[in-house]
Every structure is written in C-alpha cells, then in structure tokens.
Image (cartoon, rainbow, N blue to C red):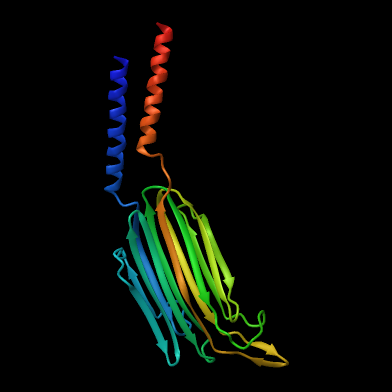
Length: 246
C-alpha cells in the first residue's frame, strides 16, 4: 500500500511541477514599461531628437534617433528582442563633433519589471578617436551607465572618461531579484576639451562609436525532476519511520 501511495504522490509531484512550469511560461519574465532614447549634435539639457515609447516594442523593431548641426552629428539605434527565455537590449551609437561644437551625446533609459529572479549581463564597447593629443592630456568624452533596482540600489555603475585612440570595453553581470521599478541607463558624451600643448591652448574634433548590450535570462531554479526525487525520498523516510514504529 505504501508503494502505491508513493507512486501516486510521485505522479502528483511530477504533475504539479509540470503545471507550475506551464503556468509560469504563460507570463512574461520581463515587462518593459518605458524606453527613452535621444541624440544631440549640440549641447542641450534634453536631447534634440528624442523618442519615448510606453511600452517599447519587443519584437526586434529598431528604434532610431539622430540629430545633425552642420558637420556635427549624433545617432543611436536600439532594439529589444526575445530568444527563448532570454531578453536582449542592443544599441549602436555614433557621433561626430567638429572643433566648434562643445558636446554631442546619445542617451538610453529603459524601465522594466521582473516577475521572477533574472540573471543579467552588460557589455559596452566604445571606439574613441585619435585626436592627435597624448593620452591623459585630452579626454575625448565620458560614458555613464548604471542598473538600478526597485530599492534605488545600483547593481552596476560605470562613470568613466574616454581615452584617445582607444577601444574601451566595460562589462558586468549579476542577479536581479523579482520586483518592479528597475532602470537601465546609458549615456555617451563626446566632449570638447581645451588643453595646453607647449604653452598653446588647443583642441581637436572628436568622435565616438560603439555598441551597448544588456541581457536578462532566468536565474537557475530546481528542475521538476529534482522535486520528484525529493518527494520520493521523503516518502521512503516516512515509510521507514512507520515500519520502526510498528
């Protein structure tokens, strides 16, 4: 009789595990609430060309912003895609800053919620120009990026100056707990700098281009088969206890 009970309970646990899996798959692990993207070819407090989408498309549609002012330009293209259980935000950006322009920049902000714990990773690559200045004399720009959770805690923060004639890379990864109010932020600035070279104040044109990629994938959880094995083990212990008591 104990054997029959064990088999029935094992079947029940397996069915329960499958039901939980099916029930969970019916809901999105990530809910994207808002996307803000903008580009400036000249310095303004807010991007000249700005797009705000509430909610943003998640089917791979490319979201583009760009701005030009004479020879100055700034642009950014972003898409959100899903492959299996993995979500990816991919951006490419490019700017060109003549000598007479103080600043060009591109900005991306994405707000989202998580219905389960998710693993995240971030990769940034930026190509800075050869301005003719020595390393350390003139900083061609700044990159700002962070991932903020629902409590306002920054799971990742990057605040770094650029470097001439260099490809800069940044990366990070971690775990984001289920909840609402996450914000992903990225801002790339190509900034004019005046430096003293042999007693002469000078500056150079600048440019910046590169890629930004952020991924979210489900954090590891116990498999249904593990739940069944645990159930079978518990039944065996229960049976042994009853036999000893008998």
